[in-house]
Length: 65
Image 1 (cartoon, rainbow, N blue to C red):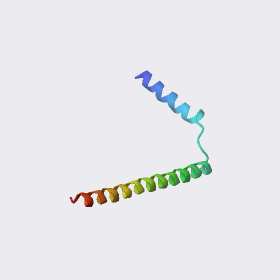
Image 2: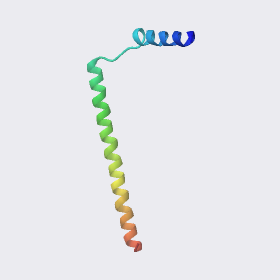
Image 3: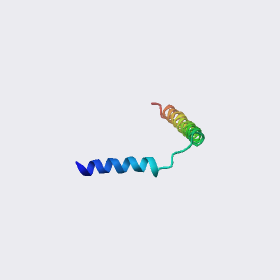
Image 4: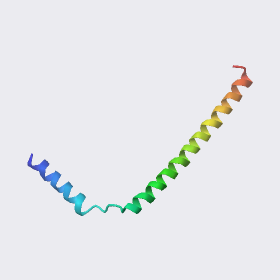
């Protein structure tokens, strides 16, 4: 149990003194970047799904199924 307590104390010390936390402005900027990237990826996937659906519907109509 002593090793576990030592581990927790060292982890706490590292979080307080060694980790560089972003400023509020940096956090806002990176959040906006992530949201824009999410929107782009969503649009690409939606476009691929739309095209695939239309192509497959066209093929099924040609084959008469």
